[in-house]
Length: 191
Ligand SMILES: Cc1cc2nc3c(=O)[nH]c(=O)nc-3n(C[C@H](O)[C@H](O)[C@H](O)COP(=O)(O)O)c2cc1C
Figure 1: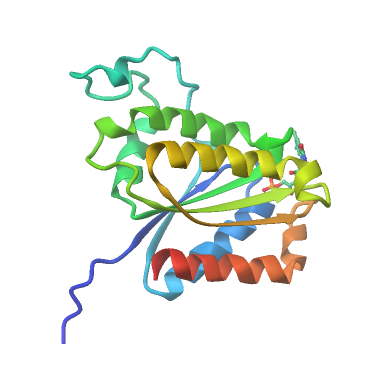
Figure 2: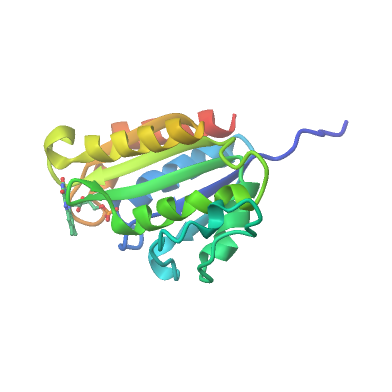
């Protein structure tokens, strides 16, 4: 018997400058959860890409615009963002909010509507790592609030948020509860 259900596509945006850092560990678990229910996962390490800051030229908002005026790696990322059914956004807390790397691509999503129809018809999972013991004192709540406001504005669904305290690279491996929550979130995202 053939299974005609389209495979769920997940795009993971790794927003830490640290490769395999703590937010990456959470994203890895979300991805594993999504894969366990049949999703295809692609990950992008943003730090390694050429993503310039939005220039506020507004050219992407003009009716006859063909897209973002900045010709950098975002031109390859826009179609991937459109094609994915879900996004996983992984970020450390840097100075009480999401990382600069994460904010760079998020700002550039202003142009996304020029690359496909219904560009924010997505399910979104968010993974956050921070060094302080407390999610309020750390600023993780500011990052969560920024994502909530952004995705409410564009009408995207936040399926879930996982967050945990971990300072040194790899510390997140010790937090079994949040790793388990991340895996479950991946299953929910793609299930
Ligand atoms: C520049 C910088 C700023 C940071 N700012 C904060 C902060 O405001 N609050 C906090 O709790 N941790 C802060 N941290 C600690 C990181 O959030 C923590 O090490 C986290 O595990 C990093 O995740 P990653 O491994 O995914 O990069 C900061 C770290 C760096 C390098």
